[in-house]
Every structure is written in structure tokens, then in C-alpha cells.
Length: 166
Image 1 (cartoon, rainbow, N blue to C red):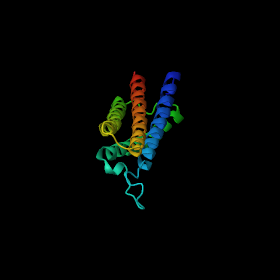
Image 2: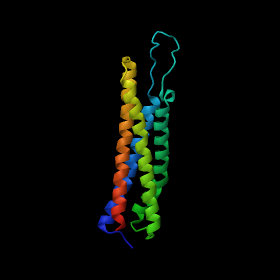
Image 3: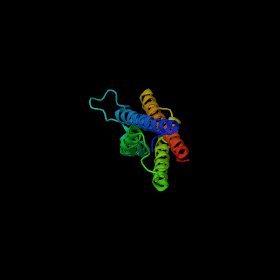
Image 4: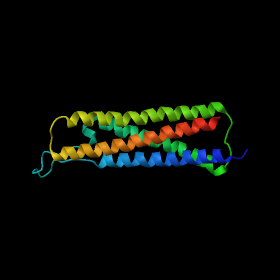
């Protein structure tokens, strides 16, 4: 059975949102991994690096972004095939419900990462620190913000998927 115009638009929107989610998660990972400071040891020849590895919450943010990216990479080929074939891949409501359920689980998982990261950042910024720490925390905020936008994309994917069942 061929796609109707609304089904084609929903499948294409879902595919594009999955690609956007993947790009946002990759950008978040890159920002978090490359963010480091050399404080407060500016005059030391070999200063210790302070990175996301020094904070458990930021490690969690990174692991959630990697797991979310892996899930999107797993589902992305199926979404692309679904759009390319321009036909319904299956009428089994249980399979569609399982896909929606996994999307919901991963959307919630992706949302918990930035929540933990922003929570630690807000608590850490309550105490006065140098400009190096302020820049470090701003970049963590940007990374967590990108993950929140990725969560929003996942929520829109879920809404489109649920609407296409009917």
C-alpha cells in the first residue's frame, strides 16, 4: 500500500527530526569532551586539566548523549528505508507501539542528562570562582542546552509517530 501525502510528510518529518537529534547529540558530545580548564594553576608548566571527567554528573551527561546517539543511529536506517520505499513497512500495531515506547524511553533518558548537568552547574556557580570556571560552566550549559533541544526533537518524533498510527 502506498503512502498518502500526510503519511509521506510524517515519515519525512520523522526522518529529518532523527537526523537533527543525532546532530545535536554529536555537537553536545564534542563541546563537552573538548571543554577543559587549566585553573587555578596558570603559572605551572604542566597544569592539571579539569574536564568533564572530574564531575560525575558531567560523565553522566556524556554517557546519556552517547547512548542516545547510538539509539538514533540504530533507528535511523529503518526510518530512511521507510521513507525511501514510500510504503508502509508493516501494519502490526504492536511493532509500532514498541517503536513509540522505545522512543519515549530514550526521550526521557536524553532529558535526564542535561537535567543532571544543569543541576550541578547551577550548584557550582553559587560559589564565586574565577573566569576560567565560569567559561567552563557556560560551555557545559551550551552542551546541556543542545541535549534539551534534542529531547524536544524526540518529543516531536513521538507526537508524529502517534498521530500516524490512526
